[in-house]
Image (cartoon, rainbow, N blue to C red):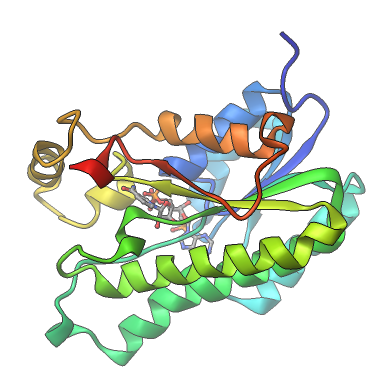
Length: 248
Ligand SMILES: NC(=O)c1ccc[n+]([C@@H]2O[C@H](COP(=O)([O-])OP(=O)(O)OC[C@H]3O[C@@H](n4cnc5c(N)ncnc54)[C@H](OP(=O)(O)O)[C@@H]3O)[C@@H](O)[C@H]2O)c1
């Protein structure tokens, strides 16, 4: 079978770790050139070393308009437009309501909502015929997880934005869908319980139907589907890759 993204150009924000990195690997395996972003230069250098000419690593904070401008200057300079965009950069932390500060609110919404919006807005002028966008939401966006309210609210916001953008972009035949991962073993998830990473994963796994957290590759497979022509009938959808978390 031909590689699904042969000769295509993709953008993955937050592609240096976890889910984003698995998506970069999958897109490269499928023949794409991938423009990868993140804030930490060391992680970007690692990605550049792993994937070589198949990637362009760009240091860009998704929440910073100046960085986003720089990112799309790189896209413009490459000259091949974009066929697939995964707006994935995101973060959060466990905090009970009583401990949430104004700075926490700004930090979570800056990356997850402002960053996602600036990424999609910046990408649209570069999209080639048949291009598709995927946004990373979260099962926390359905909002029942204790101490995860701020993060969940930001992910509910991006899912709502995606439905609106789907309607706005449909006349241009641009598809945009949200992937909703359940708990996935990544540095980001483990970082929620510093010093007790294994305990956290075990506790989460115990509450899931398969008694395990997801692997980033399982999420990446669905992202590939959503940027490929196999999902040509889908826009404004939410695709749950949650190991059955919603039926637990
Ligand atoms: N793991 C899960 O269980 C899970 C479940 C549902 C949804 N998600 C979502 O999936 C996405 C990836 O999470 P992950 O678990 O793979 O986390 P991760 O391992 O921490 O990776 C996050 C990636 O995003 C980058 N990033 C963070 N803030 C950024 C910003 N402002 N600008 C640009 N890049 C930024 C990070 O690099 P730098 O830190 O160097 O910038 C890193 O490459 C997030 O949107 C997260 O909310 C994760």
